[in-house]
Length: 314
Image 1 (cartoon, helix red, strand yellow):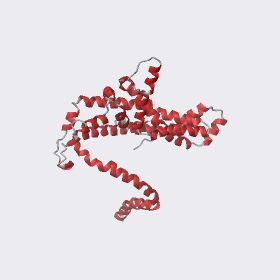
Image 2 (cartoon, one colour):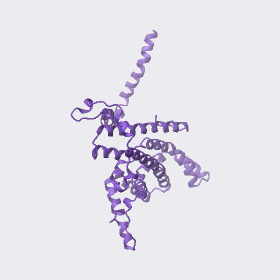
Image 3 (cartoon, one colour):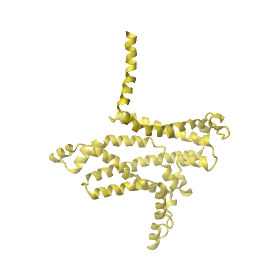
Image 4 (tube, one colour):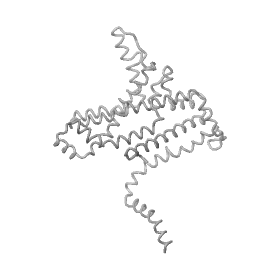
């Protein structure tokens, strides 16, 4: 009888899960495209990770290429260009967190204070639209504005000034990087915070209004606590993406003159793979190193978030 009871206890979770799937089959059906996407494009390519420990030979394929252990990592840590790209990646990513991350939050709080109407919807559309432009288009716009023959230099020469090489100036490159990304993505990210704000009960605002709270106090004591969990979640996702400092943007904006301050690990991998040595094993080793740091940072900040009372991800 004891074994039978134990067997039933083991089988029940499986039966319950199967019954749950049957009951919510349409919801699980909606999940199917997402699962297929991650399976095909995210997990299946992990087969190639083994290249980080092999000398890739196209004639022998990934599986047949000779195993070389940590040879690529021994070379990586001696390469000065790698350390420059690593340092730039860290600096650019944490600067993005410092300067860019708060902007969508402030934008959402300010938009929320506007009364419903055409002006509010017009502003939301205006701030969201740049997200749909590719970095190729945005970088073309930046060249047209700040290039040597761009609009700003035309104005400078018109008023008797000298032409400036804004896009070749190492001191100006990173501010331009942050500002252009704020312009492009802040409105889109703010939608997440606006959706979270919309879920806050209007009764709380009405009660605070009756108690005499002004707009700033309502924002501080009702809106901010309502979106704090979403802010922490977005921060965790951003930290987990630290070593991806924005390849699309930097690849389309950088040039040899600003390489010392703009070369990140992704552009370094691209250059090593397609422009110089063509060593797929070496570039895979750098990519794996980058992914491990991202995962470690995500786990670390997830623990910190839970330590201060937030839900975290895991």
